[in-house]
Structure formats: structure tokens, C-alpha cells
Length: 75
Image (cartoon, rainbow, N blue to C red):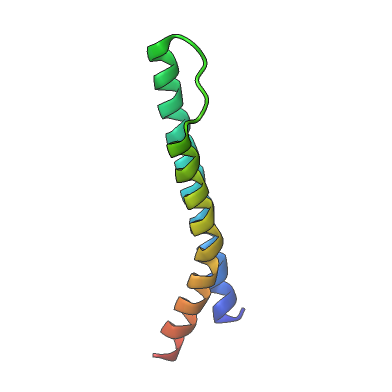
């Protein structure tokens, strides 16, 4: 398997784990806030921004992983 493909797959796996972790963390925060105010609460703008940023980072991470693995193979 090509080294850049290995890097891209590693970056993809890491991105998926990070996105899932962030989604669960935000869900936990929303649940705590819902419990505090005793009604269903939606995601606020800060949480939406955090998730959007994590998804953007997750989209770029496989490219960075491919470049990083390729550079390491050249050393």
C-alpha cells in the first residue's frame, strides 16, 4: 500500500474518532444544561461553531496525514 494512502487512512481514522468525541462531549453539555433548566435545550451558537470547526479539521486531517507520512518516508 502506498505510504500516502496509509497516512490518509490514519488521518481519516483519527478524524472520525475526534469528531465522535466532540459530538458526544457537546451532547453531554446540552443534556446537563437541559437538566438544569428542566426543559429541552438546543445547541447554542458556540457549540455549533465548535462542531463546525472540528468537522473542518477532520476534513483536512487526512490530507495532512498523507503529507506527513510521505515526508517521514523521505527521511
